[in-house]
Amino acid sequence: MTLLAAKLLASYLLGSVVGSLLLGRMRGVDIRTQGSGNAGATNALRTQGKTFALGTALIDFGKGALAAALIAPIGWHALAPLGLVETQLACGLGAALGHCYPLWHGFRGGKGAGTLFGMLAWLFPSTAAAVFVVWALVLTGSGYVGLSTVLAGLAFPMLLPVIRGWPGGMLMSLALTCGLLLLWTHRSNLARLRSGTEHRFEKARIWAHWLASPAPPAKEVKDAKDAKDTRGT
Image (cartoon, rainbow, N blue to C red):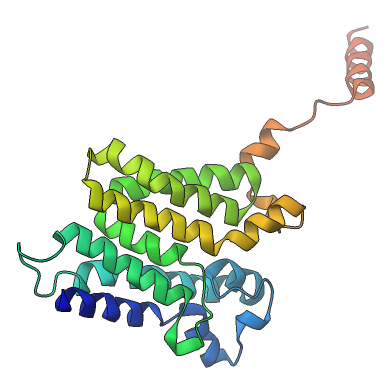
């Protein structure tokens, strides 16, 4: 138990290195004072541009993967309190908590999605791909990043047993905790969505715009038909 606690603490401290805040110090900005006030990649893109946002996403994604791939297996053996995969998922959760409530940044960080996805991509790549599809479909339909992230997070515990088979009660509990963490950290997004004030990325609504493409006005159709009839006489 002592070793497990040490791993969780190490994962939390790793997660406390928040990509946007680390890069922001190099640039002399704190994106928590800009845009939505969130320290995640979406607000980084909105306020600092693509390069800054990409760096943010890579750091945050990498924390989850490193916690699962490097910290969790240290000293693990068959008599450990949790199985190896369960320990890896728990460490990924620890890193996500560090991202959301970072020790190094006054406990004000991001919302944990990138870090959790890094852990998920390392542990369950097929499930991660399915979760990403859910995220992409909701985003391209609604344009709401927060809603897309919450639904993708809640889809994780539902897709995991479908793709991998029943993983056991402990692993399912940890997977459900991941989804609930994203639901909690995005509660302000959901509140704004209910009030109609949530920011929407209209350019992301690819298939929604395609399905909603209006038919040409009746007058334009009639003019085109008349022009065709005129050319035929």
